[in-house]
Amino acid sequence: MVLGTIFNLAGVPGLVRNCEYEAGAMDARISVRVREMYTVVHVNGLDIYFHRLTGKIDGVGSTTGWPRDEVRLPAQFPELPGSELDKSHT
Image 1 (cartoon, rainbow, N blue to C red):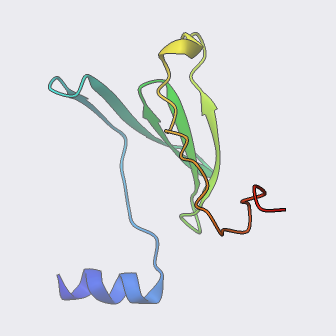
Image 2 (tube, rainbow, N blue to C red; image 1 turned 180 degrees about the vertical axis):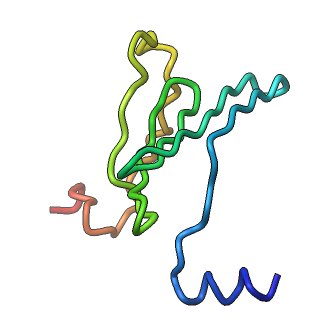
């Protein structure tokens, strides 16, 4: 655990390997594929691309052939009053 803490503090990207996982209770299908430049994590039809050297998210996409209406999208939350994006008081 100490080595993991040191790696996190140093900003070393984590290691992953190709794998498949299905969670029946949450109806989730997850797979990980390591490519030349990216690691791609597939979650219920959504592809998240991580740069291999930095570990940062480089983009997202949709799995080919997956019905778009079945891809779960993040919830949209209203802006908080007084935030930079709140235009109701202008």
